[in-house]
Image (cartoon, rainbow, N blue to C red):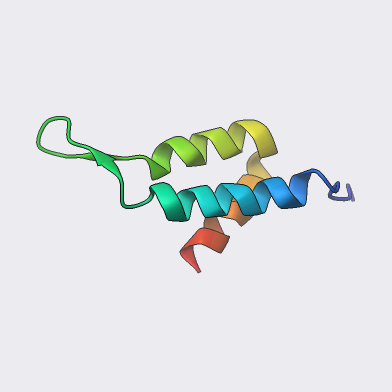
Length: 62
């Protein structure tokens, strides 16, 4: 089992905080606006990987 590094836990918390901040912001393109939360989810998947990105998203939802 791989251990979580000290770098990954604060980054996971920062991504959840960015989702909280950018969640209400949306870009009105066409009939359906695009939320910036999607951008943060993709960014967290790129930086953290699948497992910690999922943890960050669930933390935001809770």
